[in-house]
Image (tube, rainbow, N blue to C red; front, side):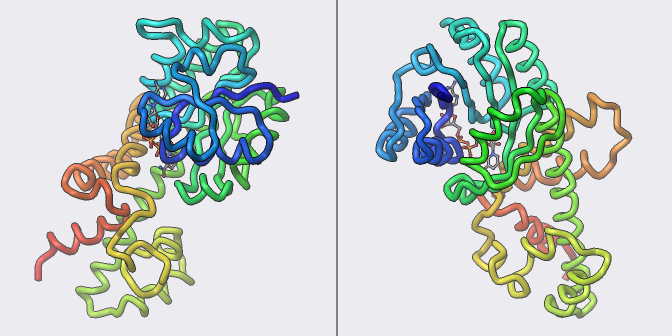
Length: 301
Ligand code: NAD
């Protein structure tokens, strides 16, 4: 038997992910610090405990879906209460699916291993829609001998699993991808505003870029202007999609990693700065492609 899964962090992503595990027949016990999240999960069929320790006691897997690495490390170590690493059965699989700092992910794995447990990082892409539909992509940092157990769990919540390497490799892949995404969206938005100034129609420029060498997801799927891609957030006044606050968060993690790794990057840090400002100045809840309205707004008439 797979054993019990303690699912900690029942927010926008964690709630529906826990529901999919239960639908697939896994024994899941949930916990969240926010009573409303617990109430929503309970309503959706996830049995919940009133403390994290209670959920993790005797569990075979401790799965976390938290906002940050600091929260993860606090939960592992315990702050004013026993830490999860201390109370868990030996050899428990500590599986973190949050998007967190690469260095903190590696620290969490090292702590778990030295406490006699196993560890994996498996951040996701695909958003709330993917979490609900069970179609997430998981980027996995884990030891090879844990992949069979991980696959059995993650394929219930996702449709694509990529084993990227050892501990921290999943987080590393996630932030590399999202750094490129942030940069490419700013580039796409600048290209469309320049096209407007030069008298090009959105459709004409789209028809060229989408089949030429500037082609990228930011244009072909999440096009920042309305019209050419009817499903893109630009067609619904930039309702996300992928919210500016989350892009700003991921680029902040990329910035830390660039600095720690000593990469001579220029566009990654600039994209982090641009999306931090976008998020702080009204874009937090808008799709990140809404950056085009900032660029257009600041341009000369
Ligand atoms: P969220 O804020 O909705 O959920 C996080 C939950 O964790 C909250 O309900 C919070 O109360 C809970 N929590 C915080 N501290 C806790 C603790 N000590 N014990 C138990 N629960 C605790 O966030 P989300 O949108 O579900 O995102 C979760 C993670 O997934 C983040 O790291 C995010 O970057 C990542 N992510 C989100 C999306 C998305 O589209 N929302 C997409 C990909 C990745």
